[in-house]
Picture 1 (cartoon, rainbow, N blue to C red):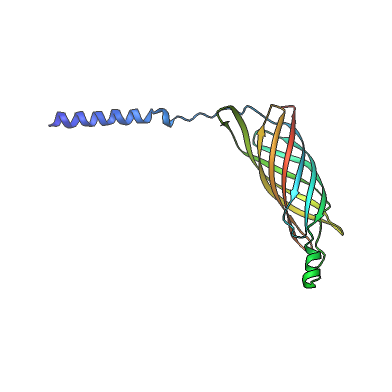
Picture 2: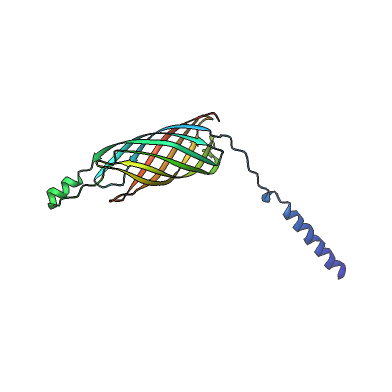
Length: 199
């Protein structure tokens, strides 16, 4: 009986040792295939939040990447073209309501700190491999309206798709909280083309 008990204990110990060496517990982290240094981007944007007008923006910016994880968007600027939705006229004609003047953004300028939080790759339809990165940003703005230039705080994030070592496409979403007598939010959605120099 003692021999049987000893044999069962030894077999259990061997099984546990095999589990510890299981390939399923081995993790491999690869180096990034694409690294960034000096990034110049141009983008088109859309400001969908305001009910009285919608804005389309043209944007440019320069970003310096310290390493694979952190970057500083040194400067970015956006010029906006606004389109009236007709809501003011409709309220006046149908209900006789006079709306107060709402601020319309004319341009934005700012700077951001960027954290490249995640990097990975995925197969698309088993045809080719996509390299992508998820990033978060926090920054400050100057926002020009019809009557004033006001400070703002910006936070957001986006997804980058690498096409080549020097070219990538980004989808970004950010919220600008404008500080002033009449505080308001600007939601900015962008599609950007980025050129990487000196990687």
